Amino acid sequence: MLPPDDAPPPVLLRSVLYLPGSNARALAKAATLPADAFIFDLEDAVAPDAKPDARRQVAGALAELPRDDRRRIVRVNAHDTPWGDDDLALVAGLRPGLVDAVLLPKVESAATVARARAALPPGLDIACMIETPRGVLAAEAIAAAPGVSMLVVGTSDLAKDLRVRPHPERLPLLFSLSRVVLVARAHGLGVLDGPCLDLTSPGAFDREAAQGVALGFDGKTLIHPSTIDAANRHFAPTPDEITAARRVVDAFTAAAARGSGVVVVDGRLVEALHVQAACHRLALAAAIERSGRTGGA
Picture 1: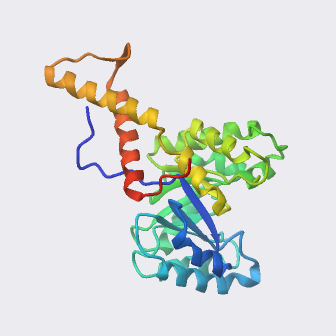
Picture 2: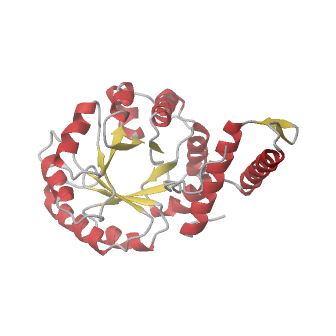
């Protein structure tokens, strides 16, 4: 069965760039960058004595950034820090439409989500960083909390807490990465992979992004604009995938018109689940085309 024609287009999350709230130049540059979304960061990227200025700069940057399809996310400090309540108050006081979601760091329980939800306007999405062992274990309860729309893996903090050694294939993190994807899909949430910190080794980002695609992530958080095009390319359907998806949908549509319940494409039986996957892939490709952010070659 094909999805209804009025189904909402997919939210693009292939490339989600962190913007340090204390870096006015980086904030101003956002409008020129082809990222699918931006995280205006008030947490790790901002020194303690720079937090008040960062809040003012983020509020100003959000007001000046042209409104389009790109998601605007503000990462706040944790509620048990001296800055968390003021960060939430900043977001709550913004003009409606300036921000799409709040990103909560180091979430380990649904209670953290509820506390933030009570301080925020109704309808504002909440994204949760899963970056501790407790967070990974509690991911299902966190995902089920009202208002949560996305899970974001914080791979650096998670690796630190797990006391794992760096590995080119991220083998020590695979269980945690897959568990977060599994939970996100079970609850219909978006899910983002952590950033690649190796910006100099040839192929490092491409390998990590390709792994994220294989694991089922919607996209990747980024720490440098130079990786935006690569993320956009990796997390988009390939031309061959788009062609194959069109063939599946066309064959299914033709079979339905004939009253046939059997669809075979390239010798493979096509079922409803394959058609739904093909429709999603085509919808994603269409959303990317409309955005104009197709990624480099």
